[in-house]
Length: 196
Image 1: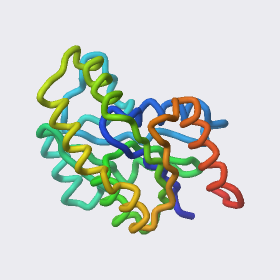
Image 2: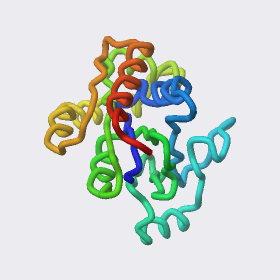
Image 3: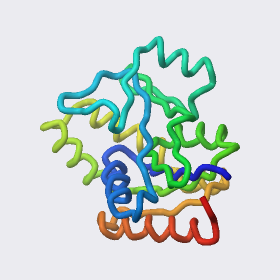
């Protein structure tokens, strides 16, 4: 049986991680779990290893990549990120938060996976406010990522349709409660009639 993967995708500061955490908390009997990603970046202050990320050296990451052990990989600010094939669980919906480029890699390599997508949207103004709240000020990086996201995501729904990935769209005006309910309904429909 194929492992089930729900990828939450959307621009920076759209609320992907918040939605993923809420979906896991809302799910009954561990029906959903967050997938741990592997990264070469150091842990941030207060960040626990073995939670969302496995922290590895650049050499270890290169070896994982060379061995074909990664479902997807990307880089950001010089750090490498990826998802190990072995990090996906059986008998659960595995939740990943990715950018569109990483989703496309996962989809190409996902011959033994059942992949679905929840696309989260948020207005640029809301995302800039979240950046400022996170960083304490506006920054060049905030503006660079916002522009990059506009370019990357302007055709995202069309990309999902062309790729043939089943998806649900969570518009900017949906709050967290409504987004969570829509994701849970999307997953219930997905699970109807299927066994783990």
